Length: 168
Image (cartoon, rainbow, N blue to C red; front, side):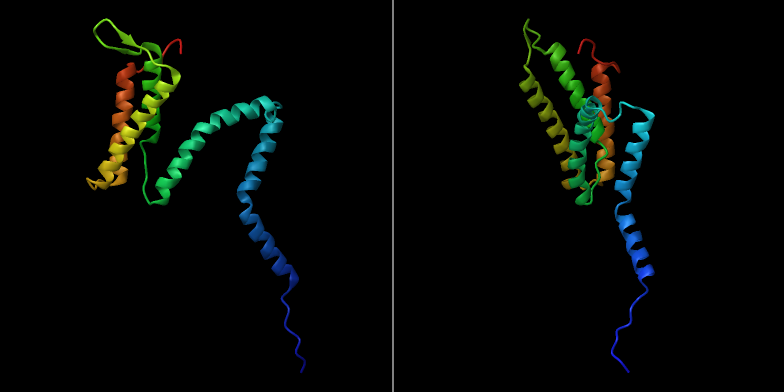
């Protein structure tokens, strides 16, 4: 008897390894397939101007996704993010065009930094309401954020009468 170790068939090990590698890279492969398809369908797809435009459009969603990642990791869900962003956009648009009328003959107009800070404060305030509903009043995150979704969306629609801001 000799002490030679048994060897597995190389073809089955390599095919299993290739399948595992393929499974790990499936999202990347799908991305490459989409890039190839759109490059053929639209010749300007991979141009520098289009890539810059896509990066600008993706930036907002990337920031929202980073914030949502923390919420989901902790086991929660926040359905109100889009409506809060919409309401903050309506607040910013209103402040840019109209300012705040003091009803005594004066109107306060804000610069861009002040409008950004006011809009951020509105978003933080609504987020705090979400947090208080969930942590202090023990409302389920799904229900609390669903309610805040409709309140924020309703406030945005009421403040704009369902229209966009002209000349903005």
